[in-house]
Length: 397
Image 1 (cartoon, rainbow, N blue to C red):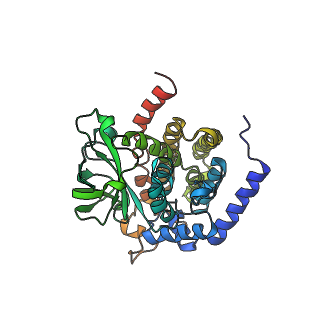
Image 2 (image 1 turned 135 degrees about the vertical axis):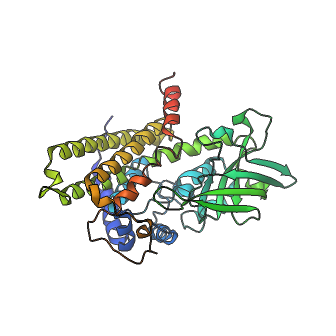
Image 3 (image 1 turned 180 degrees about the vertical axis):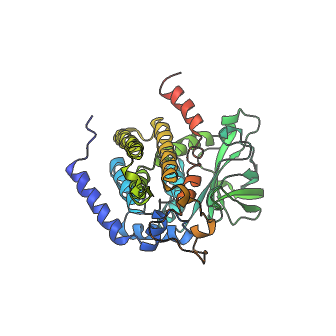
């Protein structure tokens, strides 16, 4: 199998690179490169810029308003955006519920919801995890009881990213408590403005509150917001998670953070010499660079296969390696920054901070990046769960 880029692919990559360099707002780019916090408007601004270019839905078929790109083109696009410091496009609509609606949704649902995702008119969040159902998602207890032309939903979701901004949530609920765990689950689309919904922020290690608890207290959801068939939500959930896990690999982010790591090693000094002169530091950087190159080759292979088959169990391998490499990058950045990473203030990460501003090149965001990168091996299904999937689906154990 030829895993190199063709001349057409390289020309496309250069086109994307030029566009991002010219169109990405400088203030948004600087936030990303400095490991600072992006607010809602930052995400929406970039998404609208991409949509005006016709690239708002890079992974979607043209008939649903997407670019119609191959998985390889989509990969090149993601890499260039990541390297340049562009915000990650919000995955919940584009990469998760969008593909599910294309495959399993009704025509009415497709017509109603899909056009509003690339335009950022709708902001989706994911109602999956619960206090007692994280890695064991099938143990969820949020109930949905049908009463006439509505479901009445009661329960609690946890770790719901960006629920404070979202106006819609795709939510796994238990519709048949008597069936075995996976068989009694359905997928509902819930308007976040519906009475009975409460959103409560959870502060994470780096001091941010982008994840939330969502409480649902007798929330009425129209029956037409059921995706597919009742009690078949586990099938749709697994399909969605395959798309999510492929995106977590974050090759463009890894390459961007590798560049930052190399700059940091040149800037930080020990005994009057840059740390990049230290053979042990160079060895660590070379090792992680080799791992990123291997990740790129794996992504190329999966992108080539996905053109025919869609995401499969290989997505679990990508999720594991991509998340582990991101953690290794953040840990090495923290090690190289040393004491300069200590003056960490969560307020500096936001636009609300009105005080000390670090000098250019200062490593004030390294600590926050390290703390934030504790999450990728957990969300999207913990890496331990991914290893079980690999054992069953690939190794037949």
